Length: 200
Ligand code: B4P
Image 1 (cartoon, protein in one colour):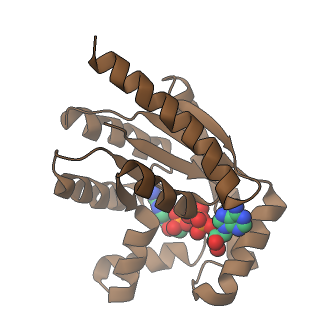
Image 2: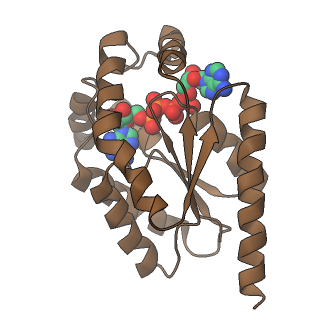
């Protein structure tokens, strides 16, 4: 199985690259941002709570997001090539919960792809998206807060996976296709490793 985490600062292109990865490697896609936005659109109880955090640039509480993720992963069943987790985990507590969840399902994370993008470019991309997205978090004040929250809460997740030898930094600057080419190199080498281990 190829179980991938894709992470990086807000606007780094997680969602954009996830769509290409899912197509090429035939994986299931779980975007916690999309799941939360669906709840918000449906005006569910969870969506109303989530919106109050997201519109201020904060992360939604760990317990809430962990239970949503666990429910959705379970729904995929076991007959799949793997999953891509887009925007999860965003805190070390979420990473710890994910490790427990994966091992209880008899599987594990293959690699964390960390998309590195310069701050000015992140802000430009999100402001541009804000012109059409209608998202309550795509404005300069909220983007600034999201970048701060990323540095304090999410960046430490990289170390968690570096310590497990499951970390790959990806240069996230340039065209969508060039960035995807860099990701393919990493994932193709992971696939070769997975096949050689299963043939031992
Ligand atoms: P997310 O939905 O994960 O979104 P994101 O960080 O805004 O965007 P992403 O990196 O996916 O960027 P995209 O491809 O769209 O999170 C939203 C909020 O939900 C969070 O702030 C948080 O509050 C909450 N949340 C989500 N998960 C959570 C969790 N696990 N725990 C707690 N809270 C959670 O790209 C951005 C823009 O750039 C797009 O317009 C795209 O077209 C453009 N773009 C992409 N690649 C480009 C390139 N190479 N060049 C130029 N433009 C590019």
